Image (tube, rainbow, N blue to C red):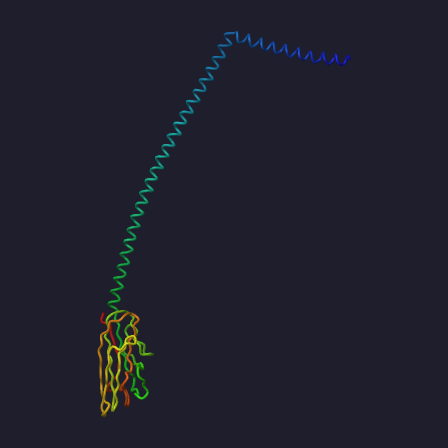
Length: 256
């Protein structure tokens, strides 16, 4: 019981102390509010604080204006750069068009130069049989190989197979010279891509003598076309003669 009374008295004392202090603080505040000088000083401090806030706000406004000016300046510079980029793009497009035009002109000039080169490229050949060939060993439509080449400008004639392969298109003139001796005769054909274009016939079939026949044939041909001389369907006797007296030959040249 005594302990209970002692604890009660302790907490009552604490409560009384706090109550007294709160009352004193409230009284002190009331006295300060009632004091005109205190109130005036508080209003003065508030005015100072308000003025300070206004000053800071003004500074913020100035900073904001400065930032806006900077932004406007950056926007102007960006617009200038955009205009410069647009101008450069326009200039680039113009240069591209000029380059394309120049490229086309160069290609046209190259084609003209190639055409002139092609037109002025010389092609000519002349080949003959090195010696007589026995007609008994020949067959109809057999290619005659003129194995001795005296001229071959353009290297279009092949003396290994007797074929002329046109390196360029154009109009050509081909010639065949055929000689037979003593009771001999031979039909020789000029052939373009397997088609007969001209025929010669050297005929000493029924007597001892030499016979000689020639052709001169213009042909318009394409690059890669093949021209040759071959035996026809009619021939017989001793031989085709190609010696110090007469020559069997195959020749041609490009006119244009």
